[in-house]
Length: 249
Image (cartoon, rainbow, N blue to C red; front, side, top):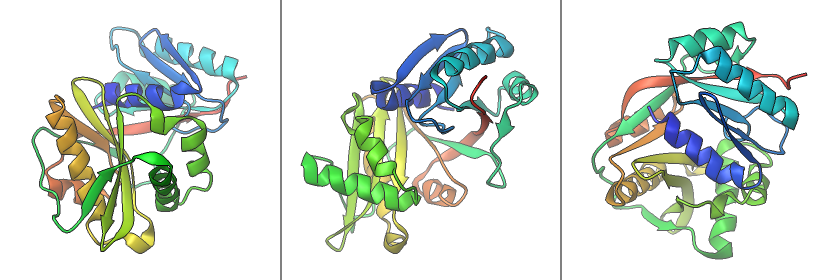
């Protein structure tokens, strides 16, 4: 469902200024920002042959050393990790009524012709991207975070801006790990929604990733955004659940 691409993306972005560790059973990425966020401080299980509790203990050791809370991403098909994360004290993030849809598409998607999309080039575009991203997510400090961690310079990434009627309205990032593409940071400020900009930038990046050699493209959707991606042709073979752990003592 894309956990490998997600892990590689977080390592490539936040890992530039943070710490990336291969641990038994998976990968841990830790930043200097002391918040439990799945794109800043997170653990990803990739090897089911390693017992889940061994993987969780290894992640806990890393974050105890770093001194931050963290998130463990759990695929819905990983029953062992779901059980172990709950038993270890991880608080499942069920803010939405369902877990995070893990969506995928394997072929080209149509893009609204009335919306223009361009890759980020130069300081002006960078400033536009981080501003729209912060406003779209409603998260103060997100613009600073993206810039301070060097995320827009991460290898394998394409950052893009969609505009309609001459106004920049939506942004997103595409990332390739070689075989799988991922779409991240899709954001549209409230005043710009309903004009097809999010669909356009997602479609543009999806087709770019497929043209670049990816056999599939994945994304983690909100329930509100899920219908947008379904109209583009994405399906939902599974879900993610995020288990949040306090700073280890």
